[in-house]
Length: 316
Ligand SMILES: [Zn+2]
Image: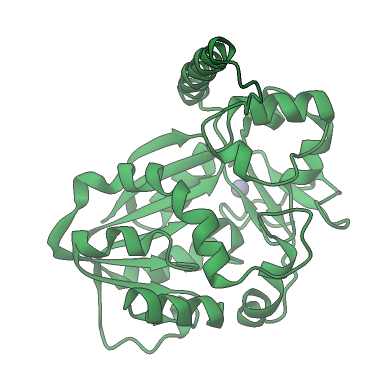
């Protein structure tokens, strides 16, 4: 398969098994980049109808989540992103988020910029953001929106680039929508995820690859892509989402926890004891877990072994 980053022909294979179903993820050793052969005929249709049904936060629940449920589940986990862009808050600047989902991020930064807008292909979510947060949302792909020369100071997309069939073209389209000197904020899953590279959990290897993720980026591949598309990479932060106890769970059970809530929060054990002196021990143990988790995340970041990379780059 031809690498969409460097054009190199590669026959190396990362996996033949995805979370659901069998497909091949190829690997370009030149870019340290994984790519799934594209498979959707109509991207807008897929994200409007299929995607949320299939990939929910609750692995056991068959119902499609409503925008409100998506918002409530996800709004607690925006702190790393908000922290990463805090230095850029400016009432004179505009911010566009591509793939804004139910507005869990945009609603929190809305008042920090002069103008914010979103793009979201799920029509239900787009409508929810317009109605609940009074934020303008486009529900077409970036390249299909009829722009009247509008440009933004900042464009952010979190857990989006890995879904894009042609990331090179997408980064060029984003470039067109950025003002001179404008910046992009990008969060992508990392190929060097700790459960793959460090813990090497067998079942996670299959869980990690899924049909909606067409790209698997490393620091090297994201740098090549951005530099080729005329961006200057300013910094890459290594951010971990799931906690230390979630990783231990994977390690000992060779499978995921039933939902994402435990893993995405500070690790806390719900000790059932009601005697006061024993309760105190529970509190101390939970403090220890929180501190251990903080150090664990620091180690992962230092060795670039986190689940996600957060990239800030400017238009040149
Ligand atoms: Zn390549």
